[in-house]
Amino acid sequence: MEVSVNVGYFGPHISSEKSLIKELDEIGISCIWTAEAYGYDAVTPLSYFAALTDKLDLGSGIMQIPGRSPAMTAMTAATLDKLSNGRFRLGIGVSGPQVVEGWHGVAYGKPLKKTREYVQIVRDILQRDGKTSFEGEYYNLPYKGVDASGLGKPLKLIEQPLRSDVPIYLAAIGPKNIELTAEIADGWLPFMYSPTLGDKFFNQFLEKGFEKSGDPNKKEKFQISAPVFAKVCDESERDAYLAPARNNYTLYVGGMGAKDKNFYFNLMCEYGYEEIATQIQELYLKGEKAEAESIFPDELLDDLTLVGSKERIKEKIQDWKNCNVTELSIAIPLDIETIKFVKSCL
Image 1 (cartoon, rainbow, N blue to C red):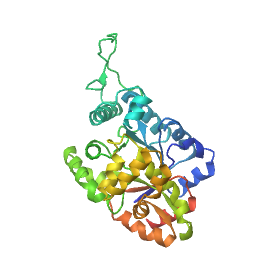
Image 2 (spheres, rainbow, N blue to C red):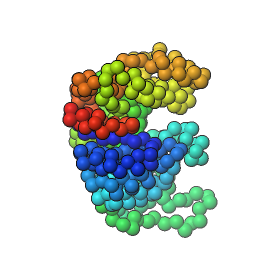
Image 3 (cartoon, rainbow, N blue to C red):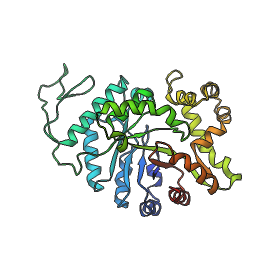
């Protein structure tokens, strides 16, 4: 199992910490992941990190599908992979309806169909076997709408990519999305992955996807990078260091998405916490966020995190080593001593 770090939406905030970024590279961290919502983008910080490092991978976790055409994403992937000498991981996802329609101004549509078409076009462009053309429900190359000029023609990426097989990771949480990820992607970026409960729920969907892929070796090659809050501390300090994780998970379960379309709420229910999840959601949507946080189950919070004494963390890491996850991605705030310790336990 590898150890990476995930700076989330805050890549620019740690860009001034050159010594930290260089030290992460020196101690053998596998990847640094960045994200985007409707603030900083996920790509620009990776270019900066590429210039400061030599070994660790650079992952977009995630670039939003509605924010870029497939061709733009393929161009960006080829560029970052070249700049980093083959260290880029392309993480993408559709995001949620609020961001897709409210921010990017495009229809949410059918996320499964849209993602499948998008990945197919990106792969085709990077393979560079010929000029890219595509006819789908969401994407058409060349464009042939009623307002088309008629001058469009299939094109081929000008530059030969350093790697034509840049690894593609998908962010997915719903059953069908997970199945699709296992079928067409190289890796999966889950959220709230429980090392003790996750495999029991997720395996059925992963296995269906592996079978559909037609690749008998897909399961062995497939990567799962799960974010986790981690901090070595005295047991008396645990509650304070768990607070950001409690806040984050409560936000996702209680208010991420519409009430009847929240995959994180559904996941908590699948983990066996349906009654508490319902209470959290009701409180959160009424604006009683502190109350919602206060009832997030301590046992689930402990299961999802690595916070506490070295003895506690070392014991809990055994659960992670025994599950499907191939990479622990430590979330900010980053503590270099904690990262070193977690890495030493694996």
